[in-house]
Length: 359
Image (cartoon, rainbow, N blue to C red; front, side, top):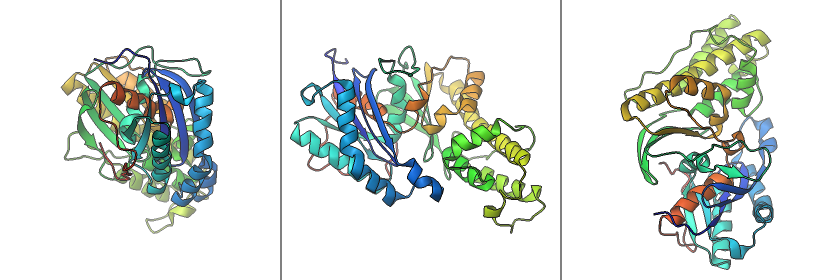
């Protein structure tokens, strides 16, 4: 059984370009959520530069943690445990968060829990209340068995949960994750990084039925592939300006009209999202989960939410869009369940990072 004693968990996230910390109470109440992003430093490069991200984490990690505690109006004596992402992610970025968490766990004598970043994304859906302004949260926590859909820049996975920590990975991408595909299509169209929001905004101006784009056929029933779709968009853009496959992708944007960009963005987005939704519907029909949840940056995409809600017979409660991108709240929430359900804490003297960690 879950312990009924009130628990406050500090979550720390530093897997990519966001430095984040949050305090979550009892696995469902958000007390604070502080995020410092270095996104602006990476925009001109069209993607995250690992060295820049790591330096940014070093500069802000302790101020972010201190702010999270201050906003929660809690001192260290009121924190029951620390949870930190140790993988997957960029090695240098993960190292900063893990070293900070290890040090704090030793200094303040707190249990330390190592958190899988990918798994944590789904646990943002367990947060149901907060006194913080401008958060729209689910009314109740998900029920097991639960179908989890993880869609982000680095991950596209479909996971069936029987209970906390008891899950089966049904399928995943074997090349680009859906978020990566959005970023690469954005580059072709000359849209700013990050690609997901940029493509989504441009797609609102276009006709999603204008172009017929392919869906990958995979040997694995629940596996994904987006590299073929990405290449199809490149070839389409080249053909639209009357050039062949040798024409450089970096020069396409200046030749495409705004109407062409909008129609390509809309057509791509529709098929990319439909690829995810098709698999989710298939898994729902086979396993009949009591709830379906989505996590990751692409989980905030309005088109994904629209298609999922239309495709499934059960209602889906979506978390606030601010909790879809990387944040400490999802880490603290997963840490709460590890702490309250008796998971053995990690050794703060030896915990190491795992950049290639998977579910």
